[in-house]
Length: 407
Image (cartoon, rainbow, N blue to C red; front, side):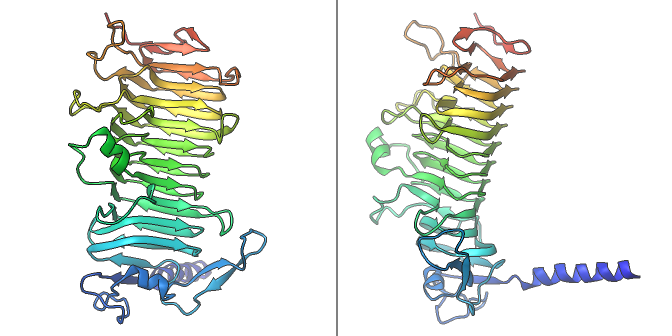
């Protein structure tokens, strides 16, 4: 009897927690800021919600922020609270800046209809537990966006405090809709980068990014980047900069453009600097494929697959990726210990692409010395398929791997 009574109490607590979460609505076309934010009486502006202190949260007691200070409640009587959802009706929402809102549970900002809430750019700074779902970010070409580098930026700040638990899911991000007739100069002058994460424990999942410079960059700890579709970019597909415990899985990266002196990579990693270390990174089940639709595109780049050329990797796991490129760097890691390359396929996308001697450019798997001359140690290279293996500058075929044989 006691067990049954306890289960009833637990179920009541769960249902009560779900019931406590509320939905609010914003409609930039038919709403009014005199309303109460319900479905039938939506607010007109997301800016109004923030500027009129309608969100209950916490913030540092003083600045510069420091973990020893602790946080205090802000806007104690506000209607929007941790766990709630703000639904955005179709329309244009401009720039959104969220600064110093540390929620105790996620507050979600979500399109009521898929990808119809369109932002110019979003900055989430020194905040915690914000989730963006099913939105679109596309800059308005009629306004000055010269100061914007990344269209979605989850940012820690030395003075105002760290950021954490910032998620962007199921969203659509681009500089413009169409770049079919862009020149290299158009790309340099008009493209924006997609997502930048310096907020730890954040998730970037199921997004579509296209017509961007760099697509996704993380410099934060414990980042999950998974199931994103990245196409038509001029920088790198995914960049991992000093981000320990990054998990990069099941992303599709394709179609790069050569518009300047950058060497485009599907996935590029590096330590915080040439001397810096990068710890505990997993790259798994990603598909990197160079230009398929129009191999004669005048700006088609020679895409590098996965590359770590700076810093020192510790416990880097590169597993079960499929890489089809026209560059020697299929998978290249220079310097590291406990580097595992297992079950990857590295192949040529187009045999008509030749080197200066008239031979096809055959991508390879390489593990070499760091720029400091440090020898890689404790590595494992198994069950891969590639044209060539270069291990510590020696052309070999490690046991348990396979060669692609061509005439």
